Length: 365
Ligand code: CP3
Image 1 (cartoon, rainbow, N blue to C red):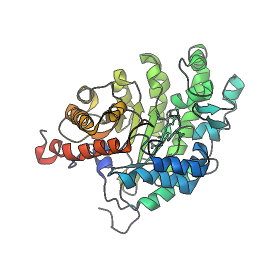
Image 2: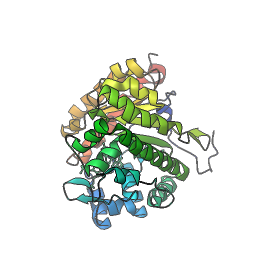
Image 3: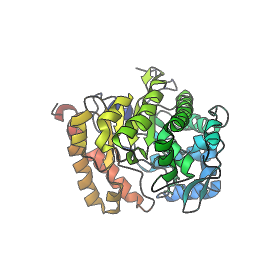
């Protein structure tokens, strides 16, 4: 037990326990993009900051929006408000967000020299605004719930850096992967070092769990997924600080559209795997649940429906995982900007109401 007066005291450690598959009285719940445009108070803070990137780089406002969803809902985790593209920005690619167009880079990677000249950013220097936000959020949370830090996977970061933004066919990225696999490996190696240092700096600043977003791992083939997504992720996870303040810092690896390759993802050394809504949690659990916990996977679009329908969908997700620990309730991807905030409340309430029967004395395992 930790002392009540230490800064590492935690009132609610359901998330950490579930990720490590330890007994819990109910299923913890948080939402990807829980601080986002569906909340009017978020839109207000973003306006005050000037823009999305200004919001990420303003310590007070990043802290403020991180806590907004926790003021509204009984969530079991906070997630650092930032973006996965902070690393390429710190590498000098010039990140900007054009209104309604998503992220873009002024200087995408186009030549061998571009890739070879990339340097690993020192998190204490060009990413200091992120670790400052982590420290402030931890102070403001006062031990209510754990704080999740995160990064993109090297593969996912590489796609944005090479394409210069979001992409449909990943033409430049795949041309490099198949045409110059040596150069792709060099890029992923540099990014892997950057991600490891960045995540460790977040833990040092106070992050109590980590998530690696492999948003575009699902566009690979089975063999290239193993080589270009899982390989680098395994190396990162082996290099992470896994113990802090006498607690394990669990790591979640989330490959969107990676349901076919869960066994492979489970070899990364992650404690938990993110699941999108195309997967059945029961199947996923039978395949890998003896090795990892699972996080997900309500279809984010279910939140467009009225509360009674949302409750029914929550019940299905909980039932599909079944009895016992090892499940963190979440959406299968980020919450959509048009969702009514009351519908998110309905989802969270339903998890609180319906999940205890899958734990403790009620548990069938
Ligand atoms: O989950 C959270 O609440 C933490 C915050 C968070 C954001 N981005 C805030 C954000 C996290 C964890 C991310 C990760 C991220 N960013 C990913 C991986 C997760 C995923 O969604 O698959 C990716 C691919 C990015 C890159 C990125 N950032 C994109 C593609 C976009 C545009 C999306 C859109 O809908 O316009 C962003 C911008 C972004 N990141 C927003 C938020 C709240 C919206 C920006 C705004 O306020 O205008």
